[in-house]
Image 1 (cartoon, rainbow over the protein chains, first blue to last red):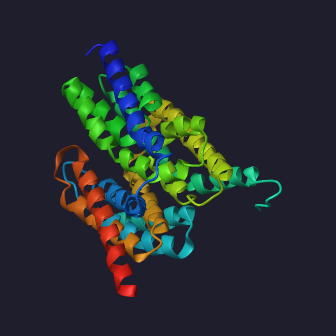
Image 2: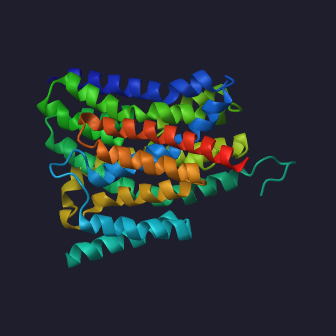
Image 3: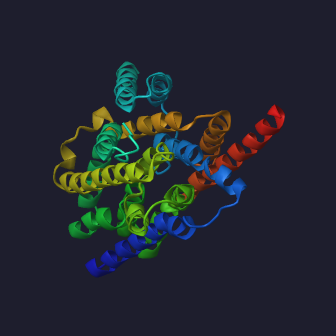
Length: 106
Length: 235
C-alpha cells in the first residue's frame, strides 16, 4: 500500500472520529433534550467505562482472551482500594503490586 | 475557592486538572510505547504511523488500524478503527448538556481531545462552573494530547527496550477499574456498570470489539430502568 493511500485512510478515520466525538455536542448543546433522555445519558459513563474495562482486561484481540489469575488478583485488590481511597495513584500502585506478586507466585 | 466577585479560581482548575490526570497519564505511557513498537514493526510508513496519533488520537483504534494495514485491505483497517471508536458518539451525547453554557469555539475544540480518560474526568466535573469546567477540560485534554504524541514517537525508537516480563500493559485495566468505581454514585449507576461489563464479557467473541457497544447500550438501558424502578418503589 502506498504512503499516500495509508495517509489518506488515516486522515479519513481521524475526520470521522472527530465527527463522532463532536457531532452530538455541536448538535445538541443548544437543544432542550427530553427529561428521560437526560436521565438515561447519566448512565453512559458507568456503562461504557465498565464495558471498556472488560475489553482492557480480557484483550479481545489476543489468541487466548480471558482473565488470568494474577489479573483477577490485581483487580480484586484494586477495586476496594479505589473505593476506600478515591485515589487513582494509590489504586494503580497497590493494584499493580498485587498483580506482580501474584505473577511471581503463580 | 470560588468567590462570586472574582469568578471561578482558574488556577485551581489547572492544578486540579494536573492532579487528577497525573495517575491516568502514567499508564498511557506504556500504551503509547506498545503503539510505537507496532508502528515500527508494521509495513506502514513511520511518518504515517505517528500521524495516526495526531489525526485519530485513540489508542485502541490506532492499534487496530496499524496492525490491519499490513495484513488486510485498507477498508478493513478503516472499518475496524471506526467501529472501535463508535463509543465516542455516546460520550458526545452524554457531554452535550454540559456544553450548553459553553462558547462555540470550545464546542469545536473540545471533541478533538475527547479520549476515554478525558471523558471520565470531565463527567466528574459536570456540575462545575462553566469557566472552571472549560479550564479543567482544556488543561486535561492538552496534557493527554502532548503526552500521546511524545510517547508514540519515543515508542517508535525505544519501545523494544521495555521488558515484556513486567506486563505493564495491565496498568490501563487497573486505572479504568478505578474510574468506574469513582464514577458510580448511586445504585442504578452500579447496575449500569455491572450490566455493561457482563454483556461486554459475554460478547467478547464478536469481531471489532462490537461487544463494547452492545454492552454499553445494555448498561445504559439497565441503569435507566433501575432508576425508574427504584423511584417507583420509594414513592
